[in-house]
Image 1 (cartoon, rainbow, N blue to C red):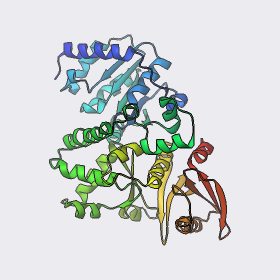
Image 2: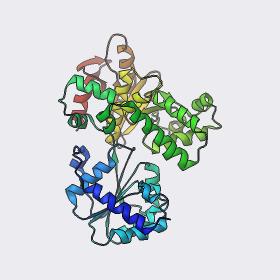
Image 3: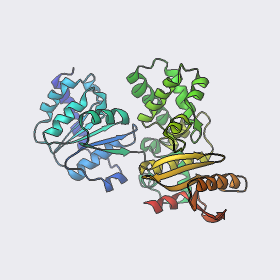
Image 4: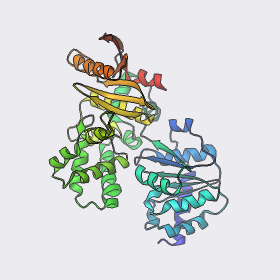
Length: 403
């Protein structure tokens, strides 16, 4: 329980902060975002990726009279579902839209949001746990909410934030540095290292009652150091002497819910095979991976592969990797149709050409496709293998064509 005067003090203080102009760059998402007149808007993403900033920009663009409340404010520590009536009184009635930050910290929050929605109010909520938000919204507000995901800066946002021009050198730097605003501002890896600890200890260990936090951290560091590689529950269980594959499955699921890591399934027409086969691991941000990698990732090809994954993930594409005799990095579906087959390498050269081409050609034969792509840092070319066209395309041009 929190006293009403403490809620009021926090609300007034946050309102003053909301009114300040911090000079943040306009997020690309704002250009395509238009509030729904009938749905609750849910904005989710990893901590420090810019959810609150986007919220401020939405307020500035669309509304004049808003109520904003951040549930991570230390002044309202211990906020319970019964305190929402006090908050409702504090916010008053002259409100065009309600904005709630990190609301998943309060158990039962969805009941209050539904009450506001049924009153005809416009509500925005943000959070850093995709599963908690979707589960609670699905229980109380099925069909009444829209989901939006926020990621660290894109390359275009990176250039704008740092005041840079587009060049190959700057793109190379972006692949290594990633897009977390605070890290780009200070260039201090400890910022991203502390972010990892916050996610693992505050968002996962505390929430789910994990006592052996050392193992949790060791598994996270192992996965971050192996982006683009296959991992399995049993393999991790044996490596870190964890009790059961189910425990490992829970750990990885919670990391994915927190937007820390993503796990790409191996393609199969059988859903049972998909669930049993090893998955490839990717990280939320290449700079984050590099700052937290035990192996100090030097392989720019793996970082580029991670970036390709993230760009398709942002576009909500259904993704797999393919592996039979050879391997193909990405199988990209639109609906039920395989749309792209993609290999990723920093540079196509005589040493890796056969491996990259043969894996792609095998996947093209499996999916009966005549065209495939090899994405590189800065090469553009075309070749033919077994009557199949292989387009070698640099990252920027490939994704420019998709936009």
